[in-house]
Image (cartoon, rainbow, N blue to C red; front, side):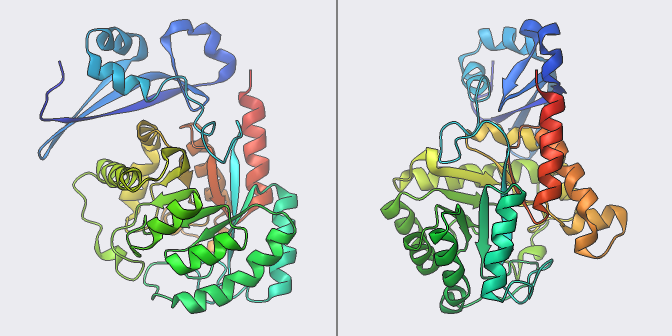
Length: 353
């Protein structure tokens, strides 16, 4: 029996290629279109964490005698993670990054020319992007806050032009005024790195327009976040934060079907934190929301491989993307659309039945 004073988490693992699922029969669990042979039961009680690994068939037997375990299991099994929101597509989605900023870590200053932005975005769509994620404020470590008025002036002309071309757009902002003008100009999804903590009016804008929101984990602000890397358990801490943010949104009238989550790789995390999160991404399926992952050209890749230039991190971006796909992640925010789309398509082809 589960303890009433402890908190529990389930993490599916042991990826099985679709072509081999028939060999397993009732010994696997389906999560987000993937199949897994094992489940880790994680128990957190005060400042103590214990972990127990089960074969799926053994966990099913255990859950038969425990209603709470059965409820946890039902959050995972037989679920297509993208079937209940605006992103209705069985296969993986790419959000391509278009930063209209002078100081972003990878492409700062490259996209300040309006005409070039339009050409670049059209190429991203041609190369396989499903959405263009437009941002007017750098959120790299140490970045200072941009005035909403300046942010709006940076992004709005591009949003209006791309919407006229019927290109799907998301808007990377933590300011309610930018959100509202972006939505009115055609933005379909808001991507807030502060998970709606930066601007109290943001939740009202989302409710008013019924616009989907991406909630990302970040401690503090971009300027201060690297000072907050002292976690009890980074995976469980990020999980609990996102769970609280989901409940907050629902309490304010936001439909859960309009919520996407992002563990925030690199935001207030050191190398060890990022690796732990990447190893255990499948735990976030228990939150019953689509999961976005932004690992493109991130610094942790250079910490492993010693390539300092962000544009030299394509190999690490692709390998991490494929690793994430094996854990059921279907939304990928990237810079290098053509190469990552090729990697995703090949993986999905190899893994199909």
